[in-house]
Length: 168
Image 1 (cartoon, rainbow, N blue to C red):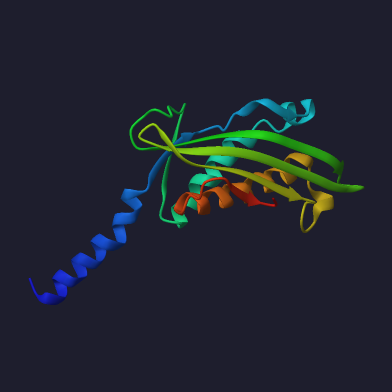
Image 2 (cartoon, rainbow, N blue to C red; image 1 turned 135 degrees about the vertical axis):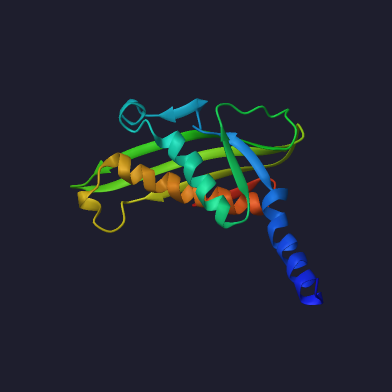
């Protein structure tokens, strides 16, 4: 093997290593917190917010070199890294005619081998963005959890304790 081939192999090992080293498990559907303030219309009509948040977190984490594995339920005492999240609040005010005023709040904690190593709280607001007049309330709330998923993914790459993400 030439010295260039060895160097290339070593470089590939160093590039690939972070994605294996930073694997995190989280729930495939982020639940509402027990003390969550969620309007009945949001609970009934926007039932996918929890799974959207988990999927967006996984998608954006991949871009940050963190592998997020979605599981049915999380065990914070398990070996490895476990991210426990919950939706604390999802507010839907306004509509397409008078203007959307929506926001979502989440909180989470990262555990490693059963020990809490960092926690965060996040909030994202949205008025619907471009063409908001053509969007439904659940679509606009979906924008908030997408932005939170990106915030959380970036936090997972470098978790800081007591972090405030998004629009805090």
